Length: 219
View 1 (cartoon, rainbow, N blue to C red):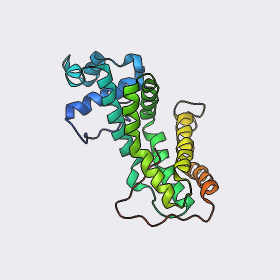
View 2: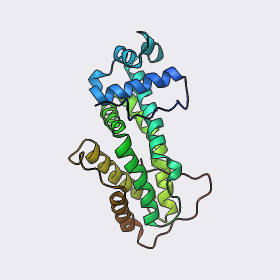
View 3: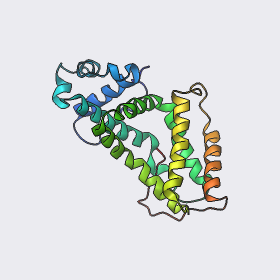
């Protein structure tokens, strides 16, 4: 599976261009070859860099994996586009925003999901990476909790977990599971998400107006 055509080709938000090139090459290898295919030498070759360049940037395998997690979080943030999700309105409006972001991910950056699963599984065996992985994921969980609270949820943490579980299950099924050949339409995703939100919040729920700086995501 190639990631050259679907991984976002954007400039890094932090660090050098070489650091982003190395991290992007690492993600491409993870998607194509899995964890066993990720080596410092392979990253050098894929990135077109002189031998030893990746080792100079990330001397240990742990450091290389952390660089991949950091870059994955940056790219997922761009694909999911937190600022586009509705911070006000009822369950249907909220569901529409979540469905739009999820559908864009599934149809345009599915290889990133393969990278996510490779790194998540590896994190279960590496406590330091687990901590780093969880910290990177806070940028997606915390705004969702805030969004559920603004929608009137009496238990925003628990309801946010339910939304995450629904989204994660949909992503797994459509990226690597039994539905990988049949990604739902955006309208179908919106219907399913709205059903979940109405069940938790009630059909008449309406989120409180958000300030201009608020943003949320369902990743």
